[in-house]
Length: 93
Image 1 (cartoon, rainbow, N blue to C red):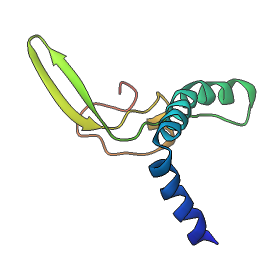
Image 2 (tube, rainbow, N blue to C red):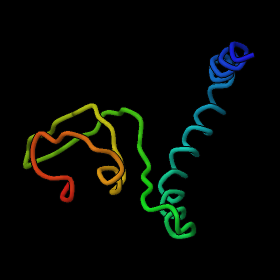
Image 3 (cartoon, one colour):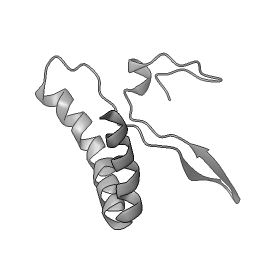
């Protein structure tokens, strides 16, 4: 049965790419407000953070522009997960 679910999950975006893009965009846009709403409405939730999939971001300093592949996450990410930092501290990240 799990095999059929996986097949369906792979076939649907191929056969209906427009709906797949709309669904993924809606899911991505809803993550940020959902995390904040969870923290406000449920007292047991101490931290919540949205996280994006890997994408290419542009960073500009003066006239230099860098294109870097990476992830984006909310402010609570480093309070929820311990992650080794190359430089700086988690509170300022």
